[in-house]
Length: 255
Ligand SMILES: *[C@@H]1O[C@H](CO)[C@@H](O)[C@H](O)[C@H]1NC(C)=O
Image (cartoon, rainbow, N blue to C red; front, side, top):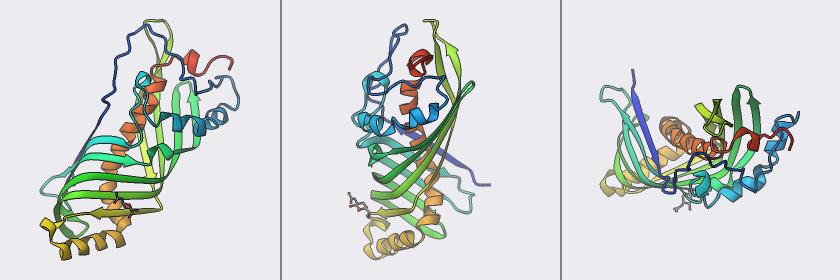
């Protein structure tokens, strides 16, 4: 059995504690949709193009981090020694470029109990980081430390979460997110690791070529921790709004 632990940390330098009792309205660039609207999903989906670009610089009040670039402190993959395929990977100082170009393709909201399903398309996400890798990629030994560039084209991310309504001190109902799930695929992934094998150019070039030809398989191996990190980011953005704004302000009786 292959065991893999994954840890992702991302920076929310701008996190501030909101004093309870402050009833936060929706950001003014989001138009509330009525919970009684039979076309609630359509109403929410239509706002995507107006809302996503507004999140680009982050919003303190809603604990939304800056999206361009989006900074993730660390993504870590460890596999235990006994695993037949094993890789240890640490990426630090990760900057994701292109996140603010996301398009909300579809949304499916169920309010009671709350279940939200969203589909995003990211036309191009460039992940630049410092990496340290050691182990095997597919069948080949790999080792190195340097700059990584992972560029994903037409990255589709499905993000779902469920939750419950909780009553806070102010007597109002707020959403509390519970489990989230992420699924992803992409049209192409360009993986480039500089300075592999202590800077041995011939070996490094060959490995990069191998990863380019086999990008799909390599993505399968390295993708899950990156996706987990992205899921946490998406979660924090969504929760920044939905957990702090009461139901009556997000989905009022009448819009
Ligand atoms: C990263 O890789 C992509 C795809 O090969 C390339 O277009 C882009 O210029 C690279 N970015 C940097 C900063 O090197």
